[in-house]
Amino acid sequence: QVHMEESGGGLAQAGGSLTLSCVASLQTFSLYPMAWFRQTPGYGRDIVARITSDGDTTDYATSVKGRFKISRENFKNAVYLQMNNLNPEDTAVYYCNALNAHHTPLWSWGQGTQVTVSS
Image (cartoon, rainbow, N blue to C red; front, side, top):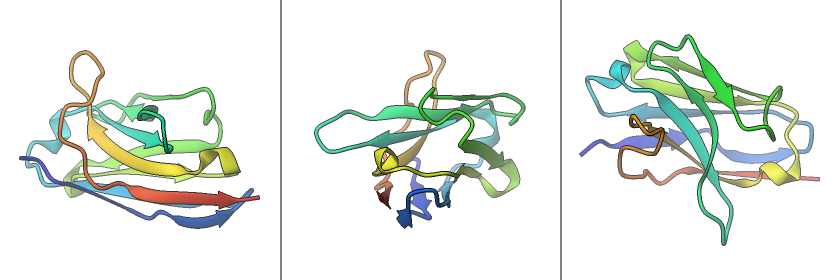
């Protein structure tokens, strides 16, 4: 069972920045593409950003492109999400997960980290 621990969420003002971190308890972390997802009450989890196993290629949802940046440090089993120019629509619980060959979540979900953006 892979354990993921997300952190770094909190309260930010519109236009502000936060950086989220996720650490996975998996020795073979470097083999997996990773992604950040977010969920708002009453809605499912939507992918926000993804990164290949080697970190060379990233992809973003249209709503965050140009504002968010995903990165990873495989020697730390960690993936990050730098969020800039936040707006209230970014308010959600953020989760990380690995992606399988079909680009869907691979592991059980962690507890996530809450991001709240005030206007």
